[in-house]
Each structure stands twice: as C-alpha cells, then as structure tokens.
Length: 286
Image 1: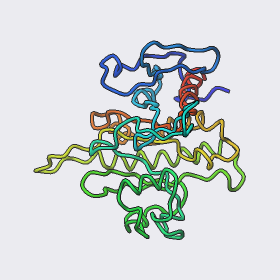
Image 2 (image 1 turned 135 degrees about the horizontal axis):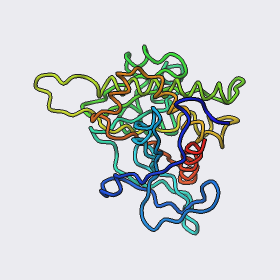
Image 3 (image 1 turned 180 degrees about the vertical axis):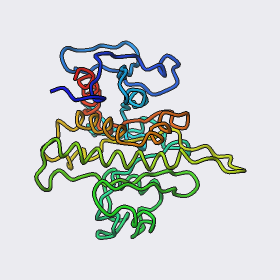
Image 4 (image 1 turned 90 degrees about the vertical axis):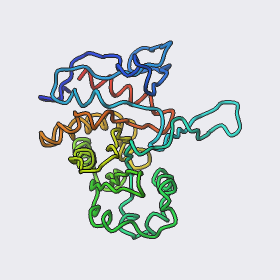
C-alpha cells in the first residue's frame, strides 16, 4: 500500500558521500536484504534519494551497527562465550547526544529511579554515573509524565541525553497505524528536544559547540515491541519520516542545518542490523 504525499519515495539509492571521504562508520554488508543477496567488497551505507520533503533529512540518518554507547551484541560461533558484547565504536563525546529508552516507572521514581533500571537504560545510567541514584533530576521528572514524552538533560559538562518513554506494545490493544502514530509522537518529541539544544543562538564567550550528532535507537524495540516484533524496523522508518514532517518549518530547518551533521540509528543487536537496512530499501519502493 502506497503512502500518500510526502511519504511516497522514489525507487533510488545513493552511496552515502561520507564513505567516499572515509570519515564515518560503515557496515560491511553481507546480508540478504529483501529479494536477492547483496555482496559488498567495501564498507557501504545506503540512503534514500528522493525529491520528497523529508528526503534531505532522511539522508542524514545512518543505520550503524552499535548501540548509543558504541557497543554491539555479537554472536561468535565456536567461541566461548558465543554471545559477546564488544565496543564497536567510541563512547559518546561532547559532540554527541544520545537517546535513552527510559521506563516511565523509573523516571517517576515508582521503581527506585535510575538505580532500578536495567538493559540499555541501565548501561546508560552507569555511564552517566547515576546508576546508584534513587531519583532523576526534577527537570526530567516534571517533563516526562506519560508515554512518548521526552526531555533533554545535560549531565556534568559534556554528557548530552534525551530521555524518552516509548509506548509498550505488550500492553493494551494496538493496530499498526496506531502504533506508528505513537512512535511518531515519541520521535517528534525527541527531535524537538534535540533542536532545542542545537538550535540555540550562541552566547558571548561560548566556546563549546553543540552536539552535532544524534545517536538515536529504535524506540519500543525488543521486548516492548509486542506483536510488532518483525515489523518494528519498517515502522521505525515510517515513524521517523512522519515525525520530521510534523515538526514546524523552523525546527526542520535546524535539523537540516550545519549544527546537525548526522542522525545515527543505532542498532545494538548484530542480527537486527540487516532488517533495518532492509526496511530502508523497502520504504524506498513504497
């Protein structure tokens, strides 16, 4: 089923020019994507190419094979242990903002705050140095009160985090359109928080640059995907595009400007990377 208006993509792919410069992470693609198998002898990354409204922003989105902290869950046949977590990319620096898939019960201190979190969020809070804390900053707690809410917070001098609560598709009754709408709201709020950081006019004496890279992750993925498990990659791409289109014109201009160099869609599980790349390809055929 074709999507209307600005969500309709042309059937075209381009090689991300960043790899011509050799300056960014790539993914050596030896995976079956859609129909047929693509073999690459060099590091490739594919993006959409289209004249649609969202395409200038979509070209900034790069699927990368690691989580927001640069780690990857890998599977090593014949090795012990067979499942390993490796540091595939560097930890975030002051030039990178990351997204935390927060649990509302932790944000609102129903379950021990940061101290009670596990999974991706637990790792993020350990990196932030708040994994022993029983409460989030009041600024975060006052802003994140329901699913899809998001809030940016600067921890210390250089650790930029956007907390977002994704919908839990295990609870309630969801159709795919309603689920995509919920994901869209979450991503839109993340983008608005990010724009609020990188879009500020510099003050006199400022020497620090804004975080020009956003490490995003698939919101409501994994165990929270409920009945949509295998559909989450495609739903994620659709929601990202819709979220961008729902921003105000001035907000979109910030994301297209020089203060936002790239948005990395971070896929932590090695086995899921090709699904998100495949979803990108399928979207281009819609």
